[in-house]
Length: 90
Image (cartoon, rainbow, N blue to C red):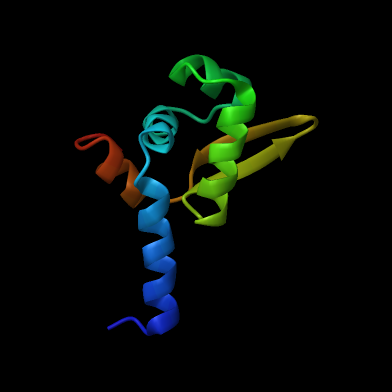
């Protein structure tokens, strides 16, 4: 059984998933690694709104970022989450 710290981390991850905007972002990231501008277009949100939601998702360790020059590429941090967000796809 997880200790209190482990349960707290799990709780934070689940809270991060409990938002329709963040779920839309995760749905897009379950398909491909994307930049903020591409995510904004895919989910119909402004880049600043997507950036805000990505900060929440990164803090919860739900998404990962890979920097390449001036570009930041976002992806799902855990393949198990892909199964949760898009059942039958991994």
